[in-house]
Length: 241
Image (cartoon, rainbow, N blue to C red):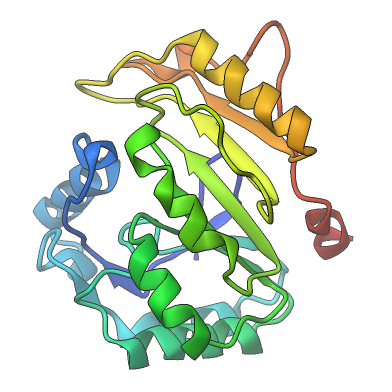
């Protein structure tokens, strides 16, 4: 387990590392930068750099973590990448099912494969499923997520690269918004965020504003119109109590 600085989770677990770019939100991938750094440092799990690599030896690690955690699965990859076989994904879901005291959060840009494989997976109540929607061109991913049998279905609109209007938020339980950070970060317009916040309000969906981003995300901070937005799905309270 690695503690996480990501504002909406607590820890990370990477039974797979590595990925390939498929859409605009991948252009300045933080995981790729980190993987190259870890490879250069000689970290064994990154011997293949950012090539998709499965790590069976870490599969059962969450079963050893006795303190309940909110765990982001594959922060350094995409669980529904075409190069990850169904049987390995099923093994990951089996571990999450057995580690019932944790809450697991999965995020994918490959919503089509998610929709294809979802009926073949067991969806315990401690597994949340999300898709990345970085611009209007990616809004179709919401439709693929909508019917997945996950107890919580969420959108990560980070890095937010354009306005995304008139979203259908039926069966969506949570929306996270954040700007791109690091070298080459694209700016994010305040009106894009306000519009998404309004859509969430109208649909009664919790809204979480993660960061403004930029080269120095600590300096730009997390305030939106003078306040923090840390809304979470109601279920998180039950899990943490």
